[in-house]
Amino acid sequence: MASEQKPEIFELDNGTMQVKITNYGATITSLSVPDKDGNLADVVLGCDSLEPYLKGDVPYFGCIVGRVANRIKDGKFTLNGIEYQLPINKPPNSLHGGHKGFSKKVWEVAERKEGKSPSITFKYHSHEGEEGYPGDVSVTATYTLTSSTTMRLDMEAVPENKPTPINLAQHTYWNLAGHSSGNILDHSIQIWGSHITPVDQNTVPTGEITPVKATPFDFTTEKKIGTSIHEVGLGYDHNYALDCGEEKEGLKHAAKVKDPSSSRVLNLWTTAPGMQFYTANYVNGVAGKDGAVYGKHSGLCLETQGYPNAINQPNFPSIVVQPGEKYQHTMLFEFSVE
Image (cartoon, rainbow, N blue to C red):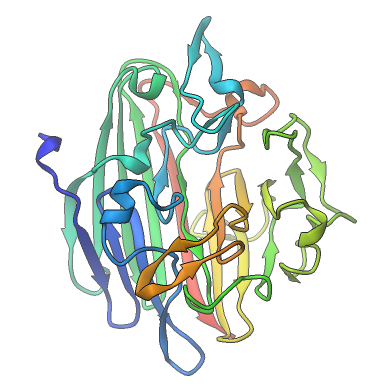
């Protein structure tokens, strides 16, 4: 049934913000919000047509990644005494669900709502053994414009017959000055995470959870991204353990990003325990929308998630979901100007 679905681009528009989303990877291809003078700009890195996404010419732009986001060490894990081997698509690890994870699948368009709070719901059925994972899983993702400049994403996944690791993440690259405006080093960010999970030379967490205080990773108060980025190798690509601070609708404050040139602000709220802060370190000459060419640090990702490699780290919050349980992950993207 799902094979009849064609990749298409859909639009959500509430008169203030416009979002374009495709059922290929449940991917945000464009999101336009006003600046301090009311001028709309598209703040998402992406492409004009679906072809580059389908051909794999873009690096996880805007998609939902799964069954397990981020890295699994050596592509291996053991669950209930059975060892599973996943594809090593980012040697020596498995990354973002394997060669053809959820981000490279055509999802079914299950529901669309118009009106003041327009929404679209995508469904995907992941079968037993897909990319090496155990059991069948039904996944839904709903994007809703909940207010004039707020977008909500609700992700759910239900294992049907076997326990399985599930960890979905939304992988949009943001540039609040506009997608084609250069790098994000002048953006400031505050992250409600006073600890990170440090990584080995292959970007896999070592299992430690260490304080950011007095390190280049400290964004507990608002700080310019470019200030210390030269001290962290290629740039930031690290998982923050989110603190349980201020809440809104049951979601915790994960990050606040601000662009000084447009005064645009993005506040991100989530139910997830962690957030990968990534500064597009590997983006190099990617052809984007309107003839833009995206280079290193041309966007930033705020991937709220379970901790990377949690399936192999007993001290990390578990990402294993049992049949009869439901994985739920909500994100709220709140745009404003200040």
